[in-house]
Length: 65
Image (cartoon, rainbow, N blue to C red; front, side, top):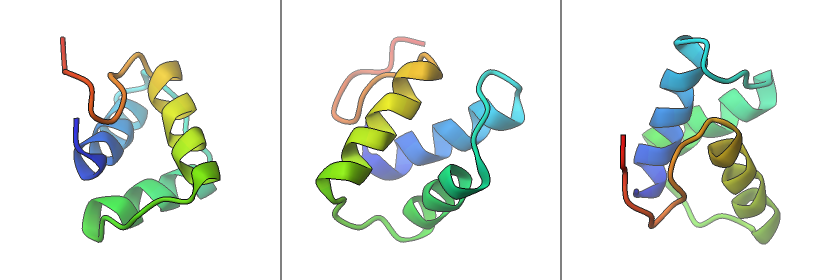
């Protein structure tokens, strides 16, 4: 999964009630959907944790849904 696709999937999971994003996490996801940018190590770790909690594949992983 590409970074912008992962961010969009997180926003969709939040809207569907499958995960809960904080305002800060939602803001980062929105920024990544509209303007993907290189992540800091901390941001990459955070996005990875959010994807895992939502049951979504990691960035670079395959979408088995």
